[in-house]
Length: 446
Image 1 (cartoon, rainbow, N blue to C red):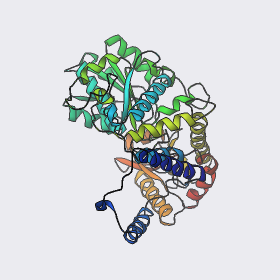
Image 2 (image 1 turned 45 degrees about the horizontal axis):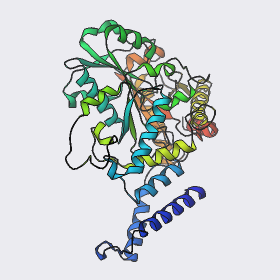
Image 3 (image 1 turned 120 degrees about the horizontal axis):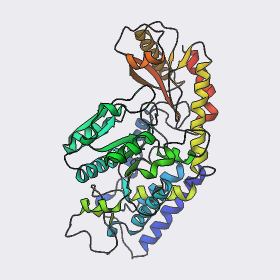
Image 4 (image 1 turned 180 degrees about the vertical axis):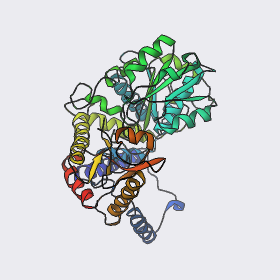
């Protein structure tokens, strides 16, 4: 915790305690009081157990999609949790509910839903995608939901939950969808992923949009991981083609707890047409009575949700605007720059080479001192384990089919059905300054 966030946290909790005391004298019940000695013992053990985590905040960690929340974001979350508001109904948290509506309006504008939209925060991207696919099923009953064979597994899983048929579409060598392999008459919704969780691939939204419109198919964008890269859509750091057309999609999912600097769990689902709210219609005889205004529970599949998530995200957006030159833009620029630097370093190395050029901030690479796919896998796993054992770096592993791998790297003997390579996720802006040191540590282990 930095000094500013610590001061903000202490000041916030002190002020809220004074506010609570203003309602009259009261004392906590004796049943809630714990002796100080026992508190110290338990929290000492707690801290020691938490130290068994990997160093997610340090730039030596470039493994999974674990981005530390901004200290001021989790300070805001902690302050709100001292009240513990529930954003299901307005009487569960009027201020936090209003903050949620404000951040949803900000995200809607950010993604290009300027005039009409419907949306809310969720507890995760999984739940956000579940809601989007549920609307897909309700609006196009008896139709299939299609997604690429590199989409997140949650789409297939949620299709099973919703009892709707999911259809995997092959991705061709140039990154486009093999639309000749499907009958558009069978499909009600097409999912397009902007930032796959494997290697951060940006799927061809510009290919899908006109095709879907022609056949009356809804388009859902899963931007759970990549959504905040829209801040760079007009820059030269990424290919902005897909990001510039997001507003043409029918629904969008983004995870603020990934690149949005938020604590877990904070997802978001947005719909372009607010009329989909009719599918949520229900009644709760004891819930929606304090206001005629919209209660967020009226447009959500989830019931109780932490209002603290909305408070933390609202605070973050006040501090970091969704813009290219200030706020989130410079943060995402650093992440993207780190991945490009790693790409250059691996391609100029005699020991490592990249699997392909990264589209966002995730890159795959592998040791070249091998002649077969199984040797690449074995060496990759050895490097992975060595870095963790001596605490010099923390990476992740990624499995690719032999067919896909040899299309890009045909010089290796195929002796296995798939190959395991190294993978780095450069989610922290600090990675931009640390990536050369990180690469040096990895190369020394080869």
